[in-house]
Image (cartoon, helix red, strand yellow):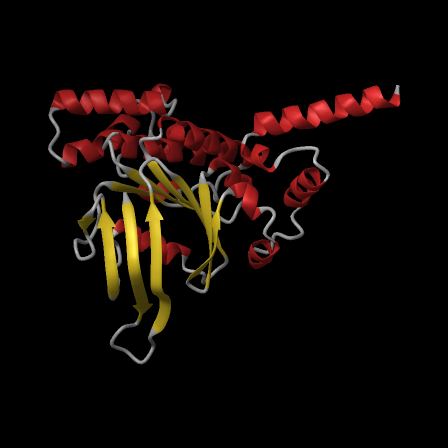
Length: 280
């Protein structure tokens, strides 16, 4: 679906304050893939997301979208972008009008708009909010409305830029469950920027950036066993990561279980049951 070939990008081109971010970056994202991007401050996450969306243009290299060279095309309207502050993306005072905003601006008919709004609200479990005032919603509800607005455009891909970072724990879990549900059909590609390890197990694949370079590219289960990548992320002391690594090392669970919480729970329960039987 998306391919970066030898991408180079620097801020401050043409000035004495040039700050290189990427040099010769290659990256591919498959259709229907859920890719997680992690890295510390200054690693290049947000710049990469802006290049994918077309908000920034590389100085060198090519960007291909479904095989078409889109390097100089500007904003890619087939890719949605969800920011960390949900209120900043609300454009209408009433929920249904906000969800309808995109299709209206792209010239959809009234019938198409009504259908798009109805289906999008259903997909995000937000149909009960249809007539609500957007400024009175919680942060989690506003983020669901923003996702409904993206669904209403029937896009190919969505970028989630720390989308859960400003939510309370309950709203965060609700949003992460919705993200998992969004990816269920494997048609929508999800590119998710995060610093939260709770989110890594939603992804098919993740990359870790450091100073503009990809230092890890693989599965969530491989990440938790990669000490150098974890060290860059400051996660070698993370309690959840250390527990999972210990469970794998002692062969209580298999590495492949870490992406599937049900399998992980079943494996731990089976181990506890066997341990109890052994005592008797």
